[in-house]
Image 1: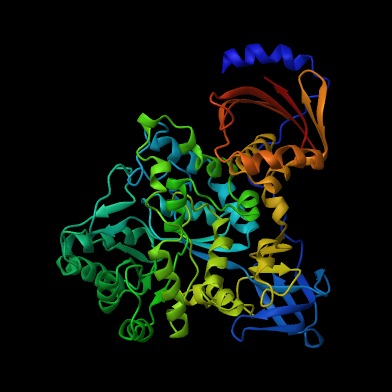
Image 2: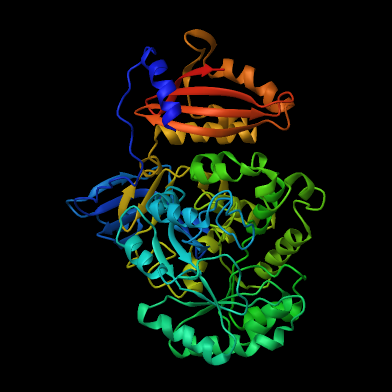
Length: 585
């Protein structure tokens, strides 16, 4: 790094632009309203009826809804701050009912599945999550997710919950601690493990009891049956954990993706299945069992597919992914294209020979979701965010689209994201719908989501605990994040996402001052052909220097010719856009 700086600083001194103070990453300062907040003449999405009710007024005082109903019947307080809802729609804030605080969503976050410690130590990934927690939480709010539920992690989950819930620019968090497990995965944190294997019923009860002083919101069981095992062999452990949890007034969530384990768990009293059944189509007996037991069904449709996409480097990133995901974690997913072969545990090109996307399990999960929905099972939306490829916050919209693909109506999907989640975790007294007395978690939208679900990718205003905030406020732009966003899109060969961080009047130079491109449309012409024709195009970031509003990237590009092309790219940022680029080759 010092050598690069030594070489480049004299070069930078010759450039004709001013270095400004760098934006500092972090969560924004959100101002609470000085008085009551009133939204008037707005159409309210009634999640109980699945209909939009026109010309409604909502009164919010502190963090609660104090009145809601037809505008002609609701009188606004004299000192209220008003929002004109004419032509707009409001719905409850959404819940991601399956996330993990201890996972980053990047390539290096699950060494039990892909051990890449030689490339990037797991401890560094864990530290990154801690350092960037509040930024990730702000992204959830920007995506309209006002509640997150962590369904298993280390004991530190409880202190994380408290710190997150103390912040305005973070969703409300409900958590549990270490998973009561029938299997111990390798390579995870051993000092504060997120998953603890128990071998007897007494050990299962003890692990539940250990968490009680920290006030878990529920208990989680990892019911894993390996190929050489029988599900019944560890069923006493599952039963003991359920009984101990219920005896202490706690619901129980169970990871049981096989038909057999799911059926045994539900019969034993499991309240929540945190994943789909993926090995068999649900028959009428199982559907009726789920309905009779009032079991919550969280399908998590995209998480397994995202592992497959990462391990085979076959991505389908959307504009929403590029905009709302953490750009640095998204970028790590494409690292296998430049990691040395002796340091990586899989060959993505060979993986393509036997992985199909979507695969049989994906199809089974989609079928089972529709069967569960039609049978009257309580379906709740969750992503398993934090796992490799499933980004915090941004993955939620992708999950909704696959639920739509499964055949659920917009009303079904909105209920799964709001009132069903509140009911499923026993929080519907305070959350999940727009009613007097409930916490004021609302989304102000420019279109009716019952008619056009895609509006949930472009939310006008988020109101969280009575505090209005704009998505743009929640996603502070830094020079480094802009440079990373365009690098990600370059590697994904997505021309629209690649151009998005650039100014409309951007100028591209060959150092020192030879103009080679001017404006986005000129860039589009130059880069579109390369993105379409060079299928193995990949840029490795060798090193990066950030100086004020300038980012200097040392890059190595492969896919063009037989040898890597090395270059230095200097990005000048102005008004939160890349305004000038200088290439040194």
